[in-house]
Image (tube, rainbow, N blue to C red; front, top):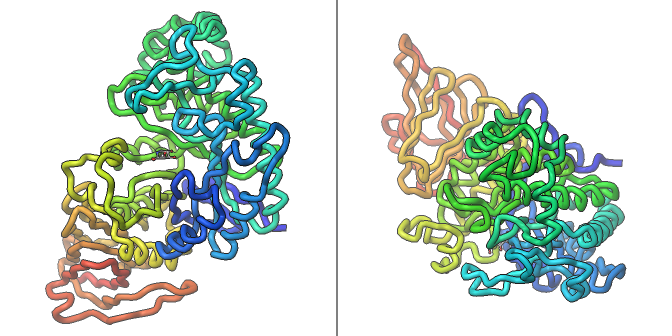
Length: 532
Ligand code: DGJ
């Protein structure tokens, strides 16, 4: 029997193992409703294939999985697995259960209608819904993270899903990870205000959690660290965590809930489990983004409450893509991006995340639309800077596809360089030029467009593979006592089954003065020689 997919950390490198081999998920997330229809999905698989993706992130919804309590319909799940196999792709399922974007719209009818048994959060005391301007004045009424009935009902449904995945896929491993819920947390208030919530909020903070928080201040974001350090040794949430108390309270009960769901699923089939995050803007208050969701700010709470969660993935729609990648890796955790826009920097971000952060998954959202004009209203909603043309232009499909195909060919080499300094990258979005210093050689990259990107992989002494797009490259010596430099080989090409297939051998005008301009994506083999 082949090993179940897992996440491993060996020699400082995080890897997703599928069938005993590591893989990078060159993935794409489909629109929310696409995977509710197998016939609709046919064209989406084609698009994923065309884009060179090896995995699709697909919602599985509670309402369709368990339309009547205790009666499960696995036909979609089974059908999606079969389709993935036909297209030789993997799946990461997204469990849309109690939460989807801080709402509960995917709960089945029998849950939605029984508001006594499946309680809603009271975002204002005594009210079962509040109007939220941001959601077009919606009567907003998420299920509460404090309702044990809902938590166990969700956990039973999720366990049934995982048992079915094991039955249908326990041998082949088409499904490699599962996301538990989607963008958890509550909007419009920092915490639930029901009587039950108040009682818990004013009661003493559980002692084991209080002590964990006090022992883990070194990794906390400054605002939470200050709150913990300035708070009392013990007491109510307010006593211990001051102005952060309500968000930490929500995070504690949300994480505990999600962990219960994940644990029930893992008992059936222990695939790597992930959560995704609706991110907070700097200085924003909890409730203007989902309070309690697994953002970096409350990571220590989630780490304590949710040991069954293996990976935390930021949905990066905010402008500071690079800063967010750093924040989500600074605690020594793997980078996994389940969602980001399909604008014209999507391809270079792919190169960048693999080359710079050695990520396990990069997945733009709404791949059906890649290449189509972007909707400005939607982009603004996603936090894109509408004044930046690169972020308002759609990703060219051929470019994305070519880069993914070149990456797929290099996969084994990339993975064996994960966790080492042999693999690096830069992108035009984060600065107009960059310099890589390896083996006494300086490889300079100037981006000819913000969409440009460049990944460098050291193959052997002064020999490199360079995947470049919209980049002007220049090679100079970095050795004080050996300033001379020759190009010994400069080739375009690609990998097939681990073997290098050369295209043009470049020389003369194409590499004049040790320079090369890659306007289209190209993989280069560059062999250099420095001498005194
Ligand atoms: C983030 C969510 O997680 C996705 O399901 C989707 O709603 C996107 N936002 C944008 O539409």
